[in-house]
Length: 289
Image 1 (tube, rainbow, N blue to C red):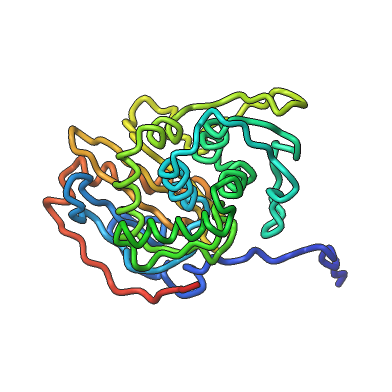
Image 2: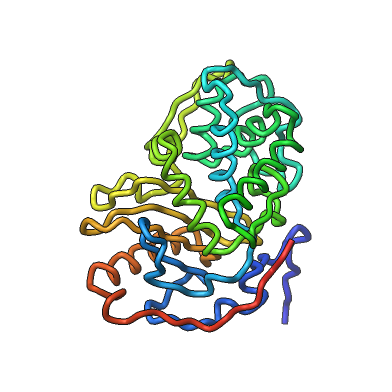
């Protein structure tokens, strides 16, 4: 029998932290592909659906919501020009970017790219240009988290590329509810696209959340995220039959699964699920930084 050797550069797929600690074994009646799910009433914060909401996990680019809050809180002018430098190149995951060093954009454009398209270099440049620099910016992120009552949240950088940026669904629902008070975050996170001049060429970006383009969804704020340790993540504020809710989905098994899970939760809510069958889920272990 002839055996073909595997390519030398073959690397087995990495499992998420949630998969590694068994969160995906948690049963739920909607058969969600996300190991963590939470839906709360936007006004009161009361939970309508909960699955492993206390599990502390990496949150990937959901981080950029806190980045946006700190940028806006600083009062820095949105029209000020910032420059992408070599310091903004990702050495954590070696991810790519269409913003080469030397790109000069306004702070507002950087913020929209970070929220709408998860542009990592833009997010890092925002933190680096904070008064006191990047370290002061991260300190401000953690101070803001404590002020919002997010005890299980910790940040080490502004992009979400580090798996040491961690939180849980309960904390993230608080952050989303706070972010809804910021008109720029609502506007930039739900914009369908943006074209910018990098100084080398015009580059068009689209929203990473495909539900934004759907006429059947009324989304007031959103943020997607992915790194291998976190799985695919999604937070949103949506209006369903006049009720405003916040959805948090973490550690989905594929890039499309988080959107499918959002649809399942929507249908469950629209059919009276929260009133007919209050949710209870088992406790789950936590992952800390």
